[in-house]
Length: 272
Image (tube, rainbow, N blue to C red; front, side):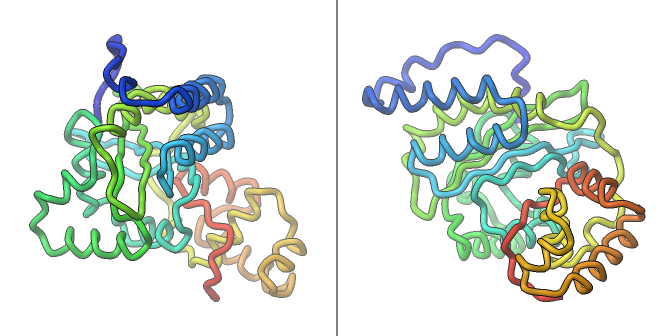
């Protein structure tokens, strides 16, 4: 991911092929990106850019960095439209370690066009990852990000599509708006980011879903109605969440989930 502490040149050529309405759409995205003050604002920006420029999925967040830009975990993940099941699998199975685009973005500056990266993949695990991603409609995409060395974090945002993208046209636009999304992600991130994970990955998909509804302020009764289970069952799952996260309250559980990049799952229909 590129370190963009220096002044950027204006990419005039990126706008030469855009229509007037597309230029207006891009300015609208830029306008709201620079005003974003909460993760929900960032999510709205990701959705807006996705819809204006023919993507079908969008996601952003922070990655904690270890020595030599090694990956040390996600934080403050903002999911605009990625599939619940895919995010859960990615997070639970540690796909960041085999995702060729993410690994390339950590090591190399610039914006990553997925298909360009895929052409150089050779390992069986990488090909399995790509095949699985395509099953979720993540066939092509563009990922961009920046590194904040002082904070030890990298920001990223990915825009994906079920179809092949016009990379020559779209990469410069993602690159340009990505810088401002980078600033928005840093603005809206928690003040402190933990360096080690607790047992967050021990959570089941149902527990992840319940924890997300807790994060949204839902009561046990409301969560039970949403998921079609009894309030007693919800309490049972919450006790299990507390035990696995080594916390004693809902607020502590929610804070831990946010800090460790828990994927935003609200409708995953997986039973415990």
